[in-house]
Each structure stands twice: as structure tokens, then as C-alpha cells.
Length: 153
Image (cartoon, rainbow, N blue to C red; front, side, top):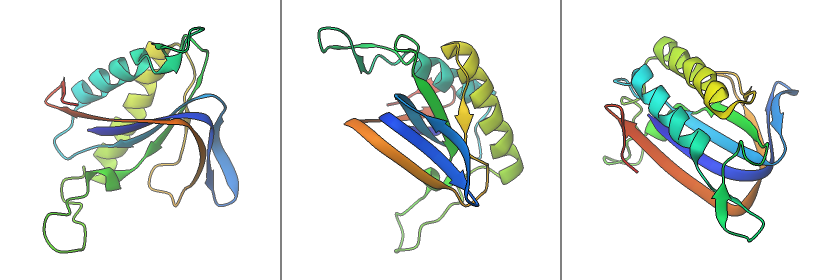
């Protein structure tokens, strides 16, 4: 499972002209589920992301989590994070999980993240053509890979 976490001052997701999720200050999380992923990866990533101290405290040090600042969470499913570009110029998505299972993991990840961060999670729509708007803060972007229940990066 791969997550790209962006600290934002605002972010939103639009599908067919309708806003499906919107946050102010907080985290935009792009999430890709691999074919071999399980709930174990969801659990580890949700725990890590809920505790990431990437917001500034009163001294300007990155010491606060999204919960500490009462920030928002917006999670967008993005199978293209699992693209394999080693051969040729056309990405292969064979490493991405099958849609039904990937959607189950996406939903489970959001449940766990909401529980661990003690806040609601805004969302995109799995498999839809989404338009994501965001204003990066910093920019501050972190990529986390979780394989076999272990955070690798």
C-alpha cells in the first residue's frame, strides 16, 4: 500500500461538478492499494498518518499531528500510485489491487484513520474521474510505503 501525504491549507474533490469532500488546514492523502495488501497495511498506515507530527507548533517546529491542530483529512483513492514504469513508456498497473478488493481496503483505511485521528474523514469516490484541488502548505509531502504490515519509508 502506498500513501502520498500532503500538508495543505485547503483541498477538495469534485466528481461530475459536485464536491464530494473538502477540508481546510490538514492532510490530503492519496492512497493506492496493491494486489497483496490486507487490512494489516491499512492499520499500520492509518496509525502512522494519524500520529505524523508535520504541523508547526508555537515555536515553528514540526511537532504537531493533524489531531493536535484539529485539522481535516481528505482521502483519495489513486491506483496510479502503483504504476510500474520500468519497461517502455506506458505504465503498467498490474501491481494495483483488483477494484473490488482495493475499494474495500480504501473504505477500511478511512474507518481506521477516522478512529485513530479522532476526526471525520472526507473522501473522493472510488473509481470516479475526480478533480482534486489543493493548496500545498510548505510544500510538505511525504510518501509512505507499507508492505507486509511494515512501514518502509
